[in-house]
Structure formats: C-alpha cells, structure tokens
Image 1 (cartoon, rainbow, N blue to C red):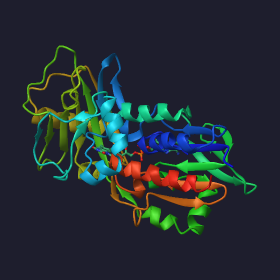
Image 2 (cartoon, helix red, strand yellow):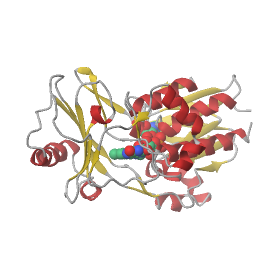
Image 3 (cartoon, rainbow, N blue to C red):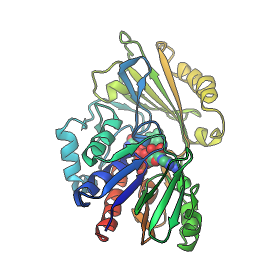
Length: 344
Ligand SMILES: Cc1cc2nc3c(=O)[nH]c(=O)nc-3n(C[C@H](O)[C@H](O)[C@H](O)COP(=O)(O)OP(=O)(O)OC[C@H]3O[C@@H](n4cnc5c(N)ncnc54)[C@H](O)[C@@H]3O)c2cc1C
C-alpha cells in the first residue's frame, strides 16, 4: 500500500501526473512535489516584470499545437483548458516559415503558460516544496527511498517519480547510478540529447506600442536570432507589452558554457536592435539560458516512462521519454500513472 509518494519536478509532466494520481491514490496517501526552482512550471513557467504584475512573458513554451490524434487522445484535457480560459485559439499572425505540422491547431495561453501548470497542481492538492534540489535518492532497507536535497532536507518516501530531463537524472547520487547501470538504462539516458538556446524577455512601459504586422516572427538565415514574439499580442492578452526572443539552436549550443547575461546583453540584444531599429527601450530585460530546451534525440522507443525499481517503486518520465510538447508530457504522465495504478 502506497503511503508517501514524491514527484521530483513541478513542470507540466509532474503537474499532470499529480492531478491524475489524485484520482486514484487512496485519500490516506500523501502526495509531495519537490522542485529545485523558486516556483512552478519548469520550461512552462511564466516570468513577471519585476515592478509590474500586469506585464508577463513566457520564455519557454510558445504555443500549444496538438495534431488531430493528440486532440483526440487528450480531449478532456483540452476541453477543460479551453472552457476555463487557460487556452484560446491563436488569432495573431505568424511571419516566416514555422516548424509546425500542417495538421496542428495552434492554441495560446492568455494567462501565460505557467497558468496551465498551476491549474493542474491545484487540482492535485499536493504538498509542494520549492528550493528543494534533490541530490541523492538511496534505497533504505529495501522498503523506502531516502531522498536528500542539496540544502540538507531529508525525507522518506515509498514511491518516487522523476520528471526532469534525462541529463539531470544522470546527475543524481545515492542508489541511482547503480540502478541505472543494473537496469541498462544509463546508456540509453546518455543517448538522450536536447537542443539549447538563450531566451530574452523584454518588458515595456504600459504606454508603449510596438508597430509590427505580426505577433510572431521566425527569422530566417540569421546566425543569432531565430524567433521573436510580441508576447502579450501572441497570447491575445490585455496585459502590458512584452516580447520574447529565442536564439538559434546552433548559437545556443556554441555558447552554452558562457555567462547568460554577457551573451544576452552583448550579443543578442544588439542583434535584436539591428533587426528592429525602431524598438522602444524596455523597462526591464530577463536573460535566460535553456541548457535543456527541447528533446533532439528521445529515449529509445519513446516509452513514456521507465520503471527503475519495482519495490519500492521508482519511475523516470518526462519529455525525454516522448517528445517536447504538452502532449508528449501528457503521454508520459499517463504512462507513469498507469504504472502506479497497477501497484494499487
Ligand atoms: C524555448 C522553448 C520553447 C518551447 N516551445 C514549445 C512550444 O511552443 N510548445 C510546446 O508544446 N512545447 C514547447 N517546448 C517544450 C516544453 O516546454 C517541454 O516539453 C515541457 O515543458 C517539459 O515539461 P517537463 O515537466 O517534462 O520538464 P520541465 O519543465 O523541465 O520540468 C522539470 C522540473 O524539474 C526540476 N528539476 C530538475 N532537476 C531537479 C532536481 N535535481 N531536484 C528538484 N527539481 C529538479 C526543474 O526545476 C523543472 O521545474 C519549449 C521548450 C523551450 C525550452
């Protein structure tokens, strides 16, 4: 009987997993979520302008673009998100060649992508702890997991689910390295690769307007910048003006070990000003490095999730085991929940 379940990570995979688990776990079972970050969302977090709550920007996920089979498989999730205003059809125009499937329907997140993660976390009613960077997970008497953080917090759980990107699973200590080796999972995790890029969020004064005919622009053949969005316009939101800029992946990979502030301020921002000479001066700029942006090579066979230990249960999931889209994360969450429900 499961009594204490821990999910590591509070991104969309963790949030959907937690909300689905809440429906099947006995009411006596505690559900905890630990994340090393200061808030929820992971790559679906929404950033706020430091001195203006009405100005936000999504530095990661830009659209939710299900193809018809994903819409079919996740119908109840899409109905819920659309009915509650977390998603709306994208109305803004896209300039330049975009990488999406013709069959895809584009939705945007009027309240920011982080609102979707928060919606699922609220439904889960889990005990969420931020600033909890899990460092080691150690098997204790073959019955429970001793989970320790870099900050010295320590707790025991009888089921642990990991949802971070594969390279971050490989950094964990305790029993994890030997389990990965004995299950012949280590090599497959090492084969998972991610793209990398830098992102800038630009926050403007409420009186500013940016006069461009597009809400999203894919920049072609530029060595530095690949993507620019007028974020509030793209999201069809009445919030103050914000912009998001993504670099190209080759630029991100080439500069990944360099300081994000130096790269963003000394290379990306000047290049943006060359591309948009009439751009007003922002009141604040957020620089970000996505070391693990989107899955390039997924885990072999894209299984959704993998059991690392049967009893006590330890499962690894997340977009490394499917692909980098909301729907890829939902497939992973569904697989983790299926594994747990078989144990109840
Ligand atoms: C720039 C960019 C653009 C994207 N665009 C789109 C898009 O338009 N549409 C789309 O559908 N998808 C897009 N994606 C992909 C999408 O963001 C991801 O597939 C999805 O958010 C992954 O969610 P996750 O929960 O699996 O992982 P994450 O969101 O990475 O969550 C993992 C969490 O684990 C935490 N963590 C890691 N290690 C530890 C540890 N040791 N201890 C505790 N916590 C830990 C992290 O802080 C993080 O919060 C984009 C991603 C990026 C970066």
